[in-house]
Length: 267
Picture 1 (cartoon, rainbow, N blue to C red):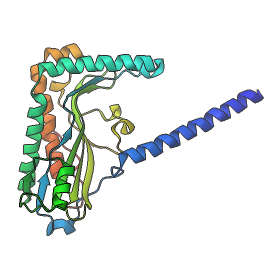
Picture 2: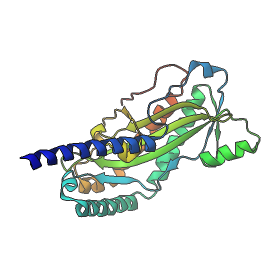
Picture 3: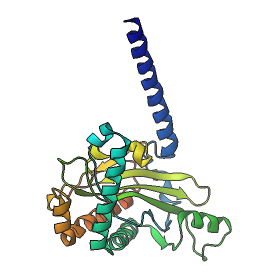
Picture 4: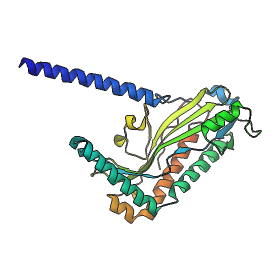
């Protein structure tokens, strides 16, 4: 009885330690993304021109269906799940080889269009965010005056299902940060989940401290299983291009010069 009590206490302490370690790791990984940062009204007169560097995005569309039972079975089952996930991803991408480029191009156009409607001048930069920062420090930005850089990091984009009992649904998780190019001050920041079931996302896996959820419910692009998704591979493209459009609206809309955050989009 005594040993059993000691063992229970030990397990409890270890659970506390592991939780603390996970929290510390999450915080360090999340970086600046610990809370949303709204654009202040004081930027009305100073922020006029936004540079839009290349998006940070994987060169592949994500296709995943998680199965909680694998977490119970162990590491070997997780490896099998990863192999199956990669196989499905390749099949879907082979069926839609140009889809990622089309969706990202639509998203960039959407962001530029909305920002210009909000009164900004937008400079399209054919370089990464870090290259743009470096060029500005050297006073070499092609003679173009820029007040801030909008950094867009697409962390996940594709179709996902949280369990065998949930449909595949289109979605995107992305972070959008606006930095002053003069002193690198963070002017605006938000992390968006556009379309995914919020219960299926892990802050730890995505390396963020919070997520603003954009509700998108269009069941025309919900697919019961992978065979159904592949059977509608052509139709399913519209689901992802629509998500890209909503993401563009969310990112640009959040830069409207006001105090509240732009959080919810419904179709």
